[in-house]
Amino acid sequence: MLAARVLAAADDLDRSAQAALARAFQLFLLLHVTARTLLWTLRAQQGMHDEWWLGRYAMTATLAAAGLVAWRLPRHARAATWLALGVLSIKLAASFPATSNHFFIEYLCVALLALCDLDAADERALLLSGARCLTLIVLFWSGMQKVLYGTYFNASFLGFAISSKPSFAALFSWVVPAAEVARLRAVRPIGPGAGPFNIETPLALVMANGVYVFEMLAPLLLLIRRTRAAAAVATIAFVFCIEAGALELMFGALFLNLLLLFLPRPLNRTLLPGFAALYAVLIASRLGVLPRFWFN
Amino acid sequence: MAHRVLVAEARLSPWRFFGWAMYCTPKLPVEIELTAVHDGARRALLPEELPPAVRQAVDRLADRRGVWGTFASADRLGTRLLASQPDAEAIEVGITHWYLDAATARIGTQRYAYTYRRE
Image 1 (cartoon, each protein chain N blue to C red):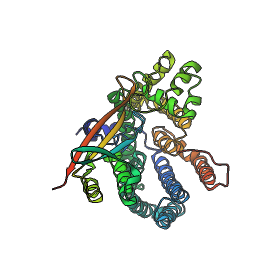
Image 2: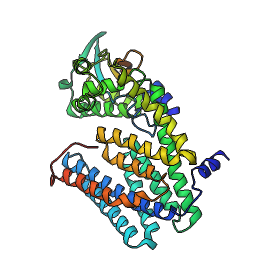
Image 3: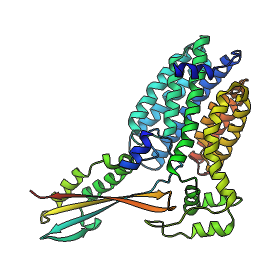
Image 4: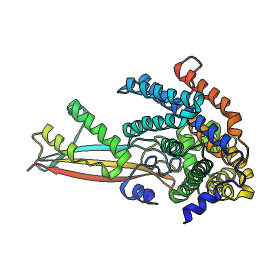
């Protein structure tokens, strides 16, 4: 079967680092879903949207407990993961159809962790192959969708973003000349017929078209063992630049951890405290303990 | 691919349903215009003329259309509007989806019109 062959291709020849990789991924993911759920709760409460914010706090506390159990009592980690999956199932039902695509990745990864016994070598390998394949699919399909929508050929999506968001205008000021930024920002009001939003600067066009080319090419290079490590480093740099620029910090952290699974050494274990610190800063900012800044 | 087709044909949200089309096209609004027909004459219904509950129903439909596209039916709203406008012989619900047209690099629109007649 093709799926079995792809999963096998995504596996490692040397499985010695897989225990550490899988364990660190498990802890990161439980930390991540806890932080995301807390931020989701705070946003709802501060925005005064409905609705059962007490229930949201309960979900956050349960996820936090699951994470703590997984960390301090490893032999109960799998049970804790199942508990986390249950909580996330409630969140999925509550948020659907407005569920973000990012959440689906989290959910599938937690499901993989719950289904696979990390103490069994073959299941550990299956977990890592499965998470890697999910990463490849998401990366490739993101690029394919950009081709299908056609808004990157003439950089019109980027042009619209510059036109409508000052932060994007500032971010891309090193690529798009001031005159073109001014032209795009002057498209007002933004309504039916407004535009054109295409960008004419050659460097910006190369960058825009380079995005989907990279997204569609990288998965192949990540799958081939000979190019895997180098492709992982390149893709990490690519994702880091985009997500940091767009301030998509939570998704960026998640996807970076998925990409770290492609490295031969468990760098994700080394970086785990750093991600924990990042989440602490983001939560503190949302609470107002640290200066507030916008992020997603 | 199915996701792309559903977005093109049914205006499903490109940002939802695990299609990974976020950052392919911007999130743009859905507009709803309401028209009452009295003795064959058409008159726009302004938000301030509507009871608060009906105004909320209009906003909810706009939100749902933004996610579900044409799968979100206007029928319930049409029925409520007929009830709230007893003198109208018909109500027209016009729903306009904005989108970024890749070919022209401009904001395009696709409009759907639904007519509800009093029996």
